[in-house]
Amino acid sequence: MKSPVYFAGLRAYSDQESTTVKVQRLFDRAGFTDIVAQHDRTALKLHFGERGNDGFISPVYVRQVVDKVKACGALPFLTDTNTLYPGSRSNAVDHITTAIHHGFDYAVTGAPLIIADGLFGRNFRKVRIDKKHFRSVTIAGDIALADSMIVLTHFKGHIVSGFGGAIKNLAMGCAPPAGKREQHNARPFTIAENCIGCGRCIKVCPKSAISVKKKKSIIDRDLCIGCFECMHTCASHAIDIDWETEIPDFMERMVEYAHGAVKTKRGKAGYMNFLIRITPDCDCFPFSDAPIVPDIGILASQDPVAIDKASYDLVNRQQGFTDSLLTTHHQKGGDKFRGVHAQTDGERQLEYAEEIGMGTRSYNLINL
Image (tube, rainbow, N blue to C red; front, side):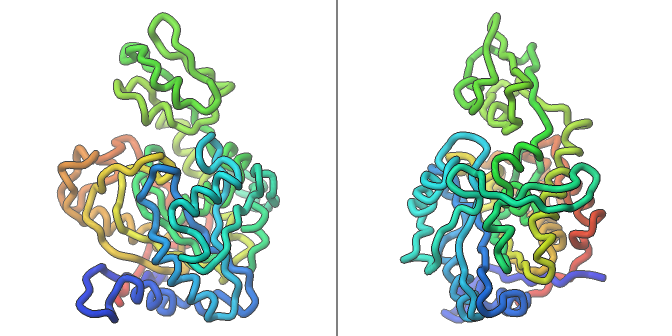
């Protein structure tokens, strides 16, 4: 059976067709009023963006969801979890400060901010899933305890998973640092003949796992946490990972964590994907590169697999921007995410999510 995915484009001809009005209509059409019950403590799962990044979802759009949740008689709160790497979101104080700096304060959104895994990422619950890689997963405590959840996702590219959609928002975004570490099984290595010994990788490594000897970088796999910052910063493409053996496992681990994040919320979770400013990389970076395709619109569904598949298809139907990081597959129908990160396979996360019962890749796209 196909899952309904509701879509609103960005064209507008009156105040009744503004983007803010469309967010409210999507909430209603996707049946989120049946998900959120009176007195629910409702988590609005977001990515507030690393300091310096500006690709995250507009707080003005988030306010529309907050108001709809309040109209259901529930108590919404904005939430995310602390990062595995040092930065502007590695503890709750810095994380909240960054979120407010990016406009996610009460005056704008109308909801309080709660970092779901606590001050240093130690507030969590174990959720039993009994899947291929994990018997149980580690989920941020205040997300696990929330009565309902609306997952708001900026759909964009990702250096390892191909794209970051609702599934990745659930997996990495609902896990404390310990849970993120469990998902990152892959470890990069240096291609010696490409390395010029510039040391840029040393500067970005959060665990001092990289050194340069005889003008070649060396990565200590025991210290490495698999954050892939070194891969992204290497201008000579001298750092890589084993795509054939490690990345399929990474995808599956990520999906199993996503499953655990919503296992206790059957019928109590809704998803909105924002296909606006579709950047080549995650909002975890302290900058936002130029979009790879035009802005498309906003989607809503109660099926995380269907909404990610619909988002993936809509992006690939676009004509890609030649003056972006997109180097191939510019044509309509081309895989834009492989055009940015050639060795990625975003479809794998969708296949495995369907396999373990998170949802279906078959969908009906319903225009507002």
